[in-house]
Image (tube, rainbow, N blue to C red):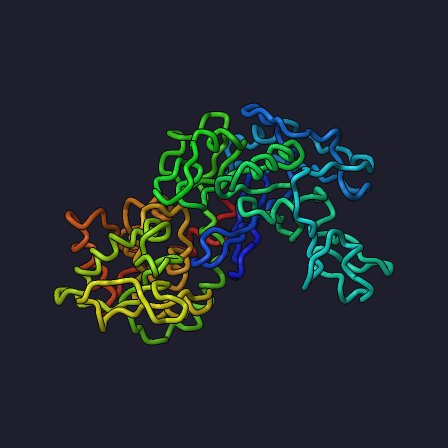
Length: 464
């Protein structure tokens, strides 16, 4: 599966296997922790929901935009059982449907997004509307120029006509297969943003396969962040036939009918940080650590949603220790200055002159700081799939990580990829001492890049 980025951040990629369904997952840069895009080998016939009523208008028939194509495709091969153990439970009808007759489909009445295909540099309602009199040069991306007409390309030929109108919404991520063809699977990666999102899901769930993925704070569990909108986690835990998760004990939360796969979007497409790290492997290390603090509200002194999400209150407490004469660390705290650079979130006085604070950075500038650090600091707990963790490991940079983190804990092998800590009172100083001494010394024992290459990335993860 592959999650396509819907943000200004650059995309990355991910692979997985669901009973022969190979997938790539598009992630984005760590500063844009919520936007992505999925890939899967073939679209799967969506199962009917049996958990929630649907009071919105129903479609009279299943249709597609091209009469000669079947947009309910199934991979029925039994060649790989290493993904979801009971993938056929997700696919109740293991038959490839015959191509449907060309009939008029019904759109959700409240779907206001009119532009549903990308023509390249602009969008249009359909491919035939892309050129606007400009010919082939205005017919790109989801469309291609054929026989003097702008028609859907192979990327989108099997799609439900409203697919891109749905995935323009924050909660929904589109999916491509390994041939860069979009397929009729949509990943739900956050709680719905209002009743309208929920109604859209209910309207299309019999025509498109919706799967869940843990990517946004506690989702699908009830949020612990006091600044987040509240919802009942049981609702989302029961909603989808399958879920990609980051939990230590998924059986504790998901009902038996939901198939689960222990896989994170941060597992995938690590080529970019690896290449960046290799390019700068001989650069001087300027800082002891980098701490990616998310998109903070500086005017509120890094309190609020992002402050809780990145555990900034604990980070301040930790900085008192880190900047003390006992450790005397240097570091960078990203995204804790306003855009004008005139105001920053407060940090301990002992850190002044030792810690650099930055405004919100784009992807490339973040990499520039990360590669100059000896280790990355991850004090957060409420974080489902921190991309900064595998970005750092891919640059051969170890982690000092909170053992209580929701996702990303699987990347930490003490002594090999970094050090865990539990809290300030028990082991933080000991863990800090180990990583400081190990990374400042001539014989650094950590092998994070080797670990990542052996266990993660698109190819490795896709085979699991």
